Image 1 (cartoon, helix red, strand yellow):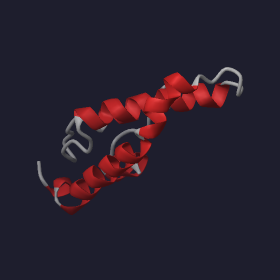
Image 2 (cartoon, one colour):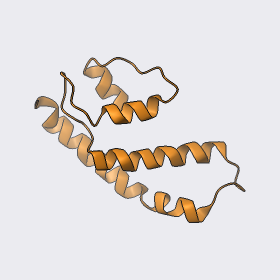
Image 3 (tube, helix red, strand yellow):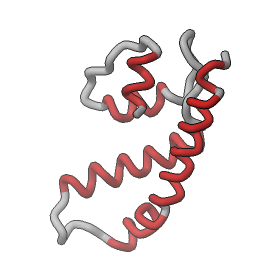
Image 4 (cartoon, helix red, strand yellow):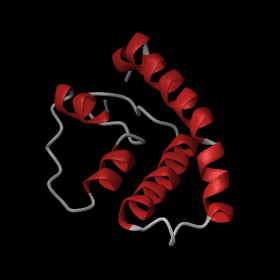
Length: 98
């Protein structure tokens, strides 16, 4: 979704290895084509999930530590709800405000 927003608003494609982090960070700032899409708080929570995704993709089952993963995993539903709320606000009104 965020890649689509960036493309629609004429923002350059990010080709760096860390494009996920750069895209998230860019969505917290306004540009000449749009207001911020994400709040700083949501950016931080999505960043935690991105780190979790990286670890879980590159680890074996023996490497995963539930005590460290549990707070992130339990919070996924709240982060998803916040993301949908902020995207809805952006699409319904924020996308037209500067």
